[in-house]
Length: 130
Image (cartoon, rainbow, N blue to C red):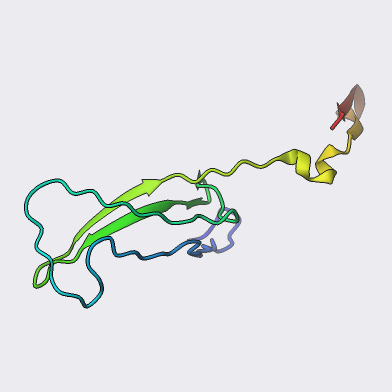
């Protein structure tokens, strides 16, 4: 594909896996088959999430998503696979970083011209105490 400037459009792709964990909630790998009779079953499990995991994100140029995948291994048949997404949110305490506590002051002046005539002056001042 060519852009409006005549340059080829470059498509960048990447995939990073931040978390991968497997847990048998019933049975074990290579163990004997277990028959489950019709009914409702509940199995508890937990996975510790690292504080370095990025928060979930859906953006224009990418996404970060997490999901729990449950597989029921059925011998001699297709496995039943269930997926349930979940959101990871980590709060960031800006008070812990010294650079965020420093005051910011910015002053900008711009002169506007139209057809070689001075048409106005824009002065902007921004002050953030911390």
